[in-house]
Amino acid sequence: MNKCLYPNSCTVYQTTVDCFNYLTPKEIQEIENNQVEVLFKKGETIAKQGSFSSYIILLTEGLIKIYVENVNETLILKIVAKDNIIGLPALFDEKNVFPYSVVTYKNSTAKLIDINVFKKLVKENSKFSYEVMKIISLNAIQVYGRFFCFEKKQSYGRLADIILCLSNNIFKSHKFTLPLSRKELAELAGMSSESVIRILKKFKDEDLIKENCNAFEIIDPERLENISRHG
Image 1 (cartoon, rainbow, N blue to C red):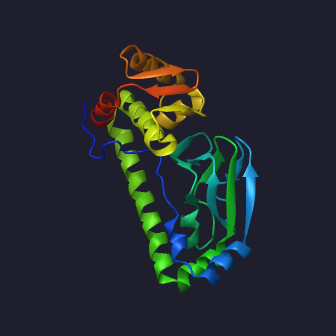
Image 2 (image 1 turned 180 degrees about the horizontal axis):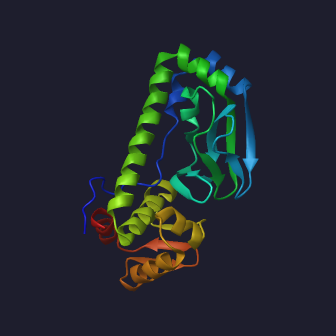
């Protein structure tokens, strides 16, 4: 098997929104005056690839997927939990369009911040701007790692990687209820639903996990991590 240069390269990336800590009280008030909070139902589109971006998305609750698509295919770039900012690449696009689509995996809440106000603060507050650039950079590095491991890892390693990422980054527990269907899990792992079901059964038979419908428990994280690293 190929050993991945990006150990446990997560399909999810947890970003604490520390950038807002660098705003002055006046700037924070400007953000609050130019945002709306919206509840999105499961499966609802928050942003559409190629559509005009009039806002930056701050996910305050829920779970979403970010993906790119053409006429016939889609590719999931990552899944994102609460306290993450989405849509930052649109800040530097002359046409102000979303480079990807954003859809909810479950009921989610997001604050939609006016993109022009956000741009203004990036230009005027250097510390805030630096933190925003750090978020963009870290997200890019994470996506590079995902693509590298997606290409080099076999199916067992990719699925182990995703289970560990969900456990460590989203639910922060070895026991969790997965809001994704088997089809959605397969889409995320880049394999067929049949392959996901078969590999999950093997993981269960080898006492790596317990799994019943959407209830998961990681029994042997060290062995699962080894599969993720070397898969």
